[in-house]
Length: 351
Ligand SMILES: *[C@@H]1O[C@H](CO)[C@@H](O)[C@H](O)[C@H]1NC(C)=O
Image 1: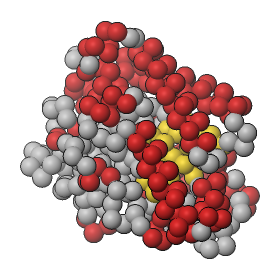
Image 2 (image 1 turned 30 degrees about the horizontal axis):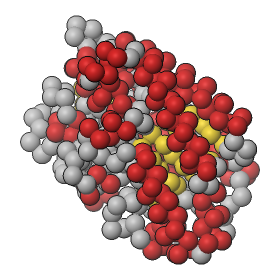
Image 3 (image 1 turned 180 degrees about the vertical axis):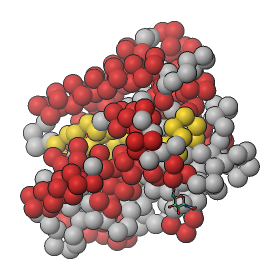
Image 4 (image 1 turned 120 degrees about the horizontal axis):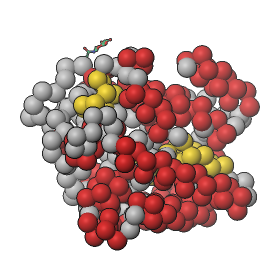
């Protein structure tokens, strides 16, 4: 894995223009979506979906809880490092999102957000439509900081990352009888993928040309899903994994269509299903000892963020051998494996 990563990066470096102001492979990273990529926007809004208290962040720089739903770095933090960034693009709602910091990009993601507007509204988090509005506001701020010419270059050459869909199923579809009686998982997936298509068209219309979007993870392997939906099933909840795979098929064909329709667009769907499933299926081969429970939180209560807090009973002392940090989110150790896979899958975006 490590060896192929090095080759992939060497290839990327030789085939990519290295920017004169630094050694990053893209000038900026601009991120939309949910808790897989949120770096702290929810700290600034009224929602229960927050991770700005211990033990979140206990393995992060200065042991600081930042709003990241992890003990340490997110997969996208590690991807930024792999691309040469020494600082992370700021959470757009944070005080750090100002001046020269905006040159690195910005993060608009909000834990709990989905493709479906209702998913986000249910959790009182920032819907994708609002994230897009913030992005447009960001563009004018960037033009003031960088000048309109350099801003246009940054917008065009930046790497755009989108992570969404898990909250639509876990926090909305599966627990909302109005929704799951009215439509099959397949129908709901088609609905979500339609929103995805429009979102990518809007991003493209605003100037984005290199976009990476995560697929759904194996939803049925998340500790919370095993607890809530697993009943007597011993392994991952196969019904949820099947739904995730169907969604992933649809989003991949939608991406193929978009790629044909929109000139100069580079669009990659990152497969996170397989790498995460492989770790859960063979933990010891990947350096893990626990793949069914999160390090923090018992998985007996539905609400993710309330599960893991300073009073959580039995939080593990060292998360490096846990695939999951809490009942929904991978640990930094698992994120490292995901990030290695993302950079290889995303070569087309940065070359
Ligand atoms: C956790 O365990 C790993 C080895 O499994 C070790 O390298 C690391 O230092 C430990 N971290 C802490 C905080 O004890």
